Image (cartoon, rainbow, N blue to C red):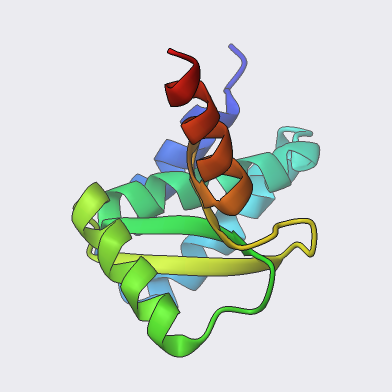
Length: 133
C-alpha cells in the first residue's frame, strides 16, 4: 500500500501536535528515517509543504501574498493584516510583500487560491466592465 503525501503530512501533524519541542524534534527525526527507509525521501519537500498547510489551517494561520509597486509601510501592513483576519477568521496572518513595478498603484492580495485585485489596473478594468453593461 502506497502512502500519499497528504497521509504522511496528516500523520506527522497528529504525531507532533500538543507536544513539547524536544519531543517534536525526535518525532521529526524518526519521521525522516521512516521516509528514508521507505525509499521516499524525494517526497520530503511536498510532505513539508502539505504539513505547513495543515498546521496553518489547524492553528488559524493565514498566509497572504501582498503585491504592490513599492514596499508596504507598517501602517498599511497592519490594515491588510486586520482585513485578512476578519475576512478569514484568522488568529494570525503571515504577510509576504512582493514588489512588482508593473503595478501602477493599489494592491493585489493572494490568499490560497483567492485573489483580491485592488490595483489601479484592476479597478479600471472593473469600471470598464460596469460601463459596458
